[in-house]
Image 1 (tube, rainbow, N blue to C red):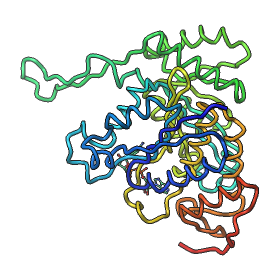
Image 2 (image 1 turned 30 degrees about the horizontal axis):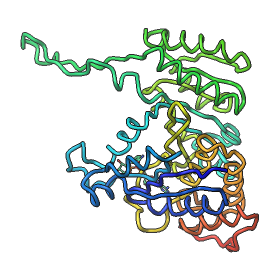
Image 3 (image 1 turned 180 degrees about the vertical axis):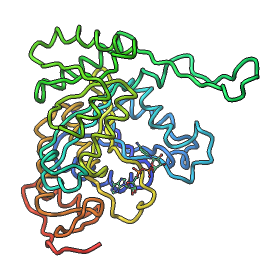
Image 4 (image 1 turned 90 degrees about the vertical axis):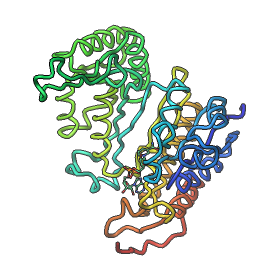
Length: 372
Ligand code: NAD
């Protein structure tokens, strides 16, 4: 097997803590992985004066996949926008051509109580939201704000953004969705607003055309308002949901909350060759950074996604996912998912437990309940 190169970008805040655990798990897999670490975000700004230094970008470009922790800290809020830590993510997306954002929403049976929905609605939930990342109203032209020309109507200021999608943009995300569905339950829900917006009538037409190449996959179309409703009414009816940049932004957060905890949710952003950047859905959590209490499971599960989607190692990915389920079944919980009757552990203990489960052993931890 040829060596697979992974660029490891821990970033800021809890990024370094959670990444250490994911790296530990990856190293235990005994795969030919070459892991190289580089600074990104605030850490890179401190070290090199830029959130995405040339050397970090080169490493990411040369790698087979990028594993990303989190970036940001309130102390950088006063910096000019181009130098803020979060610019590193936008830069990586742009330079790596990442256009498909995968956000799975999985509700582990042990964590059903953490959802705001009734347990029976979310138990066993396993859906995948695929958000297009490069088009839509976020990038339309022209964008701007204008004032009434005659100046007589001070209340008539207006602002506008233009919604646009091109055929190739819709085609490539539709292919990604149908191919992902083939690896799951063969169903795609394409979410649009075709009843009102021309852009999304076009979206619907192009998705329908691409579907002709995937007769084995079921396709349904759904308006975004109905999709928002169905996600909280009967979320398990979905398998793969594909949608545009703005609807995807909103629906993926809605779906994430069905599962109860942001500390559990991985994500992937892929290019046309399935090379990707993998990161937890959460940020750098400056409020708990340095305390050793962050949940590393979203990052560990992001590493599993990386093995599955970019490195073609589905068995290794499944090993990690099974190990995570096993530690949850053992009752081990970091503070964000802790509840009465379970055992509270820190970041490192959680990583150690996943490692132990990976090797087929239970962690030797007691199941004493710590309140708080
Ligand atoms: P956040 O996701 O960092 O934190 C929100 C809340 O969730 C906090 O209370 C935090 O303690 C908690 N939390 C997050 N991850 C957790 C984990 N793994 N375990 C336990 N608890 C966890 O969002 P925020 O507070 O709005 O933003 C903080 C910084 O992160 C900002 O600078 C923001 O710009 C940045 N950010 C970065 C990314 C990214 O790197 N992709 C994403 C979102 C926010």
